[in-house]
Length: 144
Image 1 (cartoon, rainbow, N blue to C red):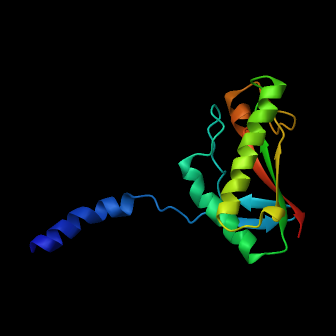
Image 2 (cartoon, one colour):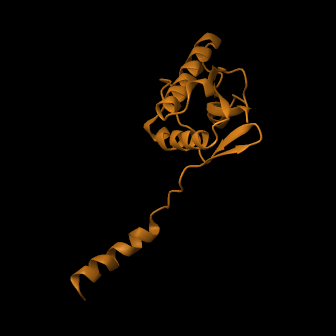
Image 3 (tube, rainbow, N blue to C red):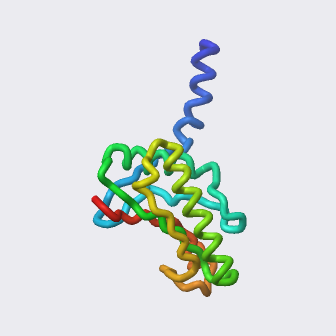
């Protein structure tokens, strides 16, 4: 067998087994922007993770295609920590998302950042899964 064909034949099984990463997407659904995956942030340090970049790019692309949209960036956390700490922590996360979108050419006037702390849980804070669900960033459409 030709050496190049042998190398290709050996590589093909690993290519087939490699997971296909879908392009991140952001769509408007009612009064929300729905993302194909969450915008990840460090739940201890309050900073966006480097893996947030593709989702932020998808959100920015959507907003640039729809110039009349204005949104609220709402950051939420679980009930661990004091109310004061959680409010400041989530405001910091929301501000970082806003700044990342501004850096991607979205007008600042179209973006409002709100840190909700632990005030709007979507799951019980009594389990790890519930706390994970409550640590989130939501994008709400203010003006279509």
